[in-house]
Amino acid sequence: MSIRSAVSRVTGVIGKWFGRIMPWVAIAFLAAAMLFDPMRDSVGVPSAAFAATLVMASVTFSYARTLKDGSCLEDELVFAGERLVSGGLAFLFAAIFRHATQDVPRYMNTLSEMLPRRPDQPPETTFFGQHPIAIVCGFTAFAIFVVGLVYTQRGISILAAVMSQRAKLRGKDDRFFESRVDMDARMAALVAADGEGKAAKTDNEKP
Image (cartoon, rainbow, N blue to C red):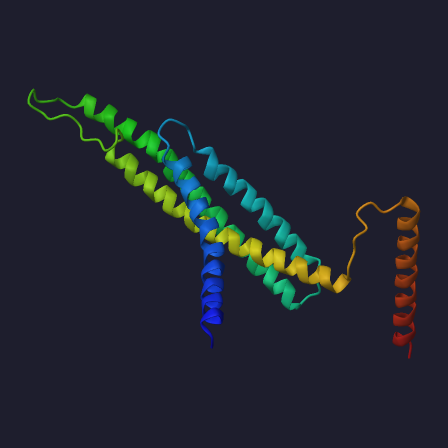
């Protein structure tokens, strides 16, 4: 093996892993920026992800019911729907913990103000201007959010792969702006083909 081919292979492997990892690094960075930003109410981020993921899971399960019973693709779609549901549940728990980062410190401060304080009692400890419990809850929300992203991307990847395979079975179709006349003719041909298929099935069922 020549040096040039070895370098080319190593470069290809690095580029492949770089292309896989960098999108996730960017997503994790954006998720951390949204979930840990103390100046904005980011509870809506995991809440919106929860709603969108459950909608995709519902579509995936409905898509699976359109396939033949016992089909391997049907089983894959059901698995993809289950991954999406798992991701949605993770987003739900992330939203709960993100909400806790705002309310739990406030409740604890209220409780602390109700208790008698000594004159020499030290001030409350904060990290970067945030309550320690808020940081713990925020980190937990971020970790669960990333888990939800992993499950969700798995479900979406399977759904996209199944759709791609079915599109290949159909053949190339670049008629994005098909005329009404051509569409009516194509539908009529499909109806005729269905009629011939039903007739042949009836003939085969006759004794």
